[in-house]
Length: 177
Image (tube, rainbow, N blue to C red; front, side):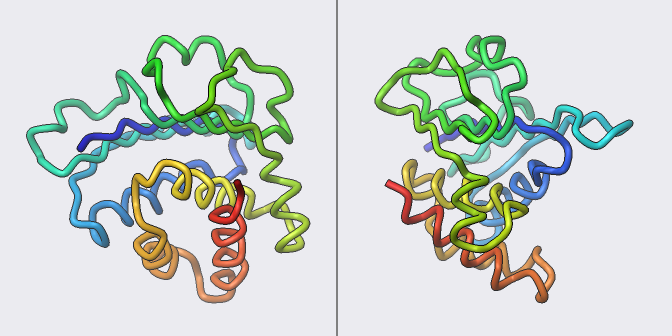
């Protein structure tokens, strides 16, 4: 088993946090091997953020730290939608935050366009956890990790005063069909 996961968004959307949660859930709580990298525009909030994760059940299946053929992609913001197509597998799961991604070239049965910000606002009362809603949806649709492992990673990473809010967001994402 090997998954190449690409997460793209803008600064302030919790893209790097989402990558840390996925990586921890895979490595510590699922016993898988993980490597990854982050790229972000540090000069201003709102610049492009990107996380590349490779998750595998064998260390031999991890040969590089950057995604070369993503089979799971999440776009929280429409940065270079068409450009990233060159590093996506033909049968990739594609998750698009329709709050910001209004038009896109991806029309497959594995492409999901969901207004994660609006879901977070309706269910939790704030769009600040839209990244966690998207994480729940991604986990539920792909089966890349179990929800219990993701919950354990959330408990470890998220400060206690924000944990209930994030758990509600995760559950909301897990229930999106």
